[in-house]
Image (tube, rainbow, N blue to C red; front, side, top):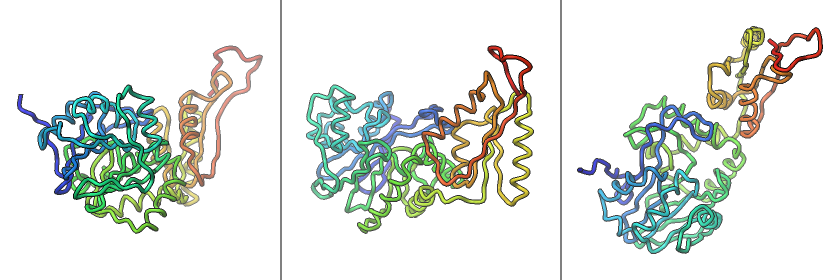
Amino acid sequence: MKNTFKAVPVTEDVWWVGAIDWNIRDFHGYQTRRGSTYNAYLILTDTVTLIDTVKAPFREEMMARIASVIDPGKIDYIVSNHSEMDHSGSLPEVIAAVNPKKVFASAVGAKTLKELFSIDREITAVKDGETLSLGNRTLTFLETRMLHWPDSMFSYLNEEELLFSQDAFGMHYASLERFADESDPAILAYEAATYYANIILPYSPLVLKLIERVTAAGLSFRTIAPDHGPIWRKETGGIIGNYAKWAAQKPEAKAVVVYATMWHSTEMMARAISEGLAAGGLHVKLMSMDEVHRSDVVYELLGAGALAVGSPTLNNHLLPNMADILTYLTGLKPRNLIGAAFGSSSAPLSAPTAGAGRR
């Protein structure tokens, strides 16, 4: 059958050879309604280099895209910017198929890949700031630990001013349009913010330090090529500026009221609280955990200045869907929020019994 999977040119020397996952709807508890992509990139220079691979079930799609521009056996180097399985799952099979001269990763990445897979070859560890000659092009490696794994790093193609940013600056968005300027700006704005809120938010202090570091180094980016979603090739300062804004978590005049209800008593309280906050001049988002997903709540909290949560009691505790969102938020560590809690219950006439519900 004729190969329908084609590589997409990013620059004269760089090609997108990733895979599109149209059907994924959950990513570690984060709802991905528009699917995702697993981006891999091929640098066709004197030393042919593959940047990252794809999730294991999508290996053949990636290999077909590579084969549309070059014999995969001509790949000299593979660089693993991030060892998470959606980017390294097919790596062992790709190594076996193409037999590259070298495989590169950060020091932590080299160790992690050996722990995850049975790879019968050395993984060359590179240091922060180290360069790698590709003949007529040069890669510079930048460690970005905990953005968002300990092994994470960026690779920067100096002559092209192109940043391979692994999970940073990305989004979960399946599309046949490979570039951000070809996509609906409203979708991009929503998905980029949702991605940051659900994936990057806990590491915001590190994001600010990284932006300061890159600014001080005088690096410029004509293109930012993340591991998920579209490639930024115009106005790359926009997504960097958004990351700086989101990482600062400067509170705005917005309140998010999140509740769960049993017999609508808590819902009545939530609506009354929302009306009062709005009367005080705040923009208010009222969200029922019976109707919305946890990842939507986190999106709305990005930039908010206040969070109010409410629940009735069930078995002398809060409702499970409220426990869910509070647990999720605890891990994401949003900052600079004024918090409030409310709820409804009725005093028992006698000792409580198992399964007793409250309003």
